[in-house]
Length: 200
Image: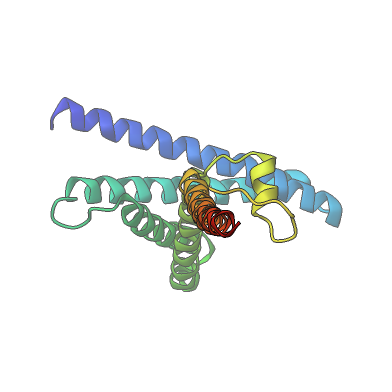
């Protein structure tokens, strides 16, 4: 087995244990708080819930990491979009975590646990991917005056440079037309004054 492969497996195993530890701390803390509110032994409930959350978190992260690394290696043949890889690996990781969690509670709970946690893994990854896309999408920075001028109730409107140039050209054409009309009237008045001067 190559050294690089062993290093990747150790990193995957360490990250899975860290994820399981984080889930255990969170799960035992919540279970202990719940047990205290119910008047039960916080130590027992926290310990049991911490153990279950450790198994769930470690199994989920390990299965997700292994499936994702295999999908990435086969990307040329299977996938070109990493969000699909994340979605599939999270769903499969959730199913494996559901199997492990169901095995702790009895064999009859394995299949429902796999289905439910698989769907939770899919839904959670889809929500995360959607939120990340919204957050990372490029947004145009606009000043408060631009926002106000684009609203329907604001009396002033902002226009682009092209629209402004078009409006100016229309005004120039209108002014040139008025000048031409005034020139025609002045020419008519000159001809009229020349005609009256000849009569006198």
